[in-house]
Image (tube, rainbow over all chains, first blue to last red; front, side):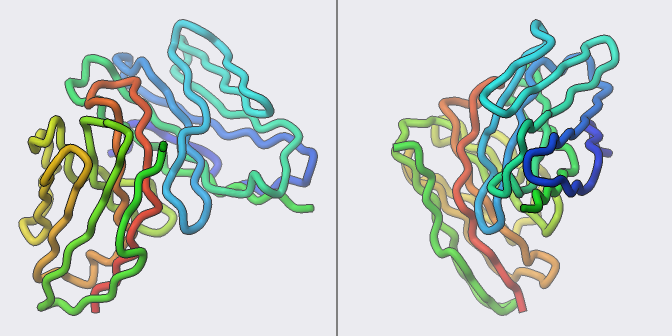
Length: 114
Length: 114
């Protein structure tokens, strides 16, 4: 059973548009929410991460919005570029988990058209 | 150096073969991980080594045998695999096994079992 639900499964956006990926969780013990970006033929790489003490975190064109009461968080990619075409995984973990296992969402394949 | 290297990049093996996957990192990380990733799916955790000791085995079949010869190296020995074991095998490392530590992934070994 997937502990983090991610949507949509795939997304096509025009260059310059905004890509939005949503994730939801049930385990209130989760307290760290990273996003990983994976290009074809590569391993995932950490893109941005947030803890629940803040509602938003921005790094360049990438923003995480976090809604603790709704147990939801989302990734916004502003001014999407063809180079952003990749699969994005949200994840969650908890410091009370003795070994920090990442619970991944199912992934979203983003295609940015020129 | 923030790189995790994996060899080989591709491996084709028969069900009776014995082969090994190799992973190396020189970031001084003390936690290393093996993941299995099927196409269009998130990575699935297989094993975690912490300070060169196996700390987590996610109920992985015994035909997969991990080994951590030293703090920089991680091997995955393969024997009598099944076609359904064909997947991308990812190695990752982090500073230690606790939450909040970024996991750095290698590019993976694409395994095909005939």
